[in-house]
Image (cartoon, rainbow, N blue to C red; front, side):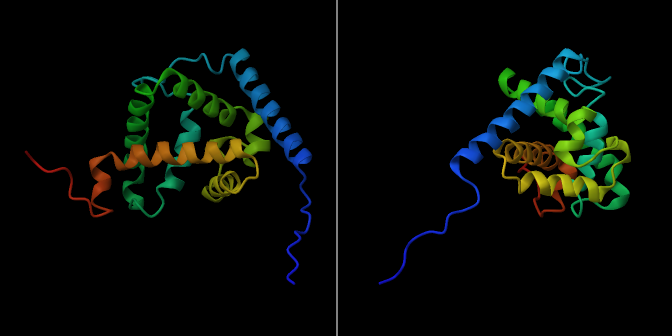
Length: 181
């Protein structure tokens, strides 16, 4: 007869619930802190509809890491600027509920009190090395906390949709563009 008993894991249902509850409380506190400190209420950056000045350092650190290999290094500054422009357009057309969640995510990533513990990037995003940003993305992607995994998936989808919606990205992936009518 084959033994089908399972070895008990080190993580019980109770401890999983505790970790989830603590993580949720931490993120809710961070979001409330951002809202009360006025971080959420800031105006969009000049020339943009949604993305705020406080979001730009993070996006300028994140986008080059996500576009690594898809853009020639010489074209990276233009690609980052274009992706931010497309991202702003996309965010401006989100439902109010989804936009609120995205703004909260950007707030958590912008605040030093939450950025360090959640991302491992303890300094400002302007000083973050690409390896640090990649480590943050890997950390969130492989996290046991579902909220961080969802944050990673959201960031990945937002940036990739914004980049690949641009005509200059199509050549790299072999897409000839939409048919002319």
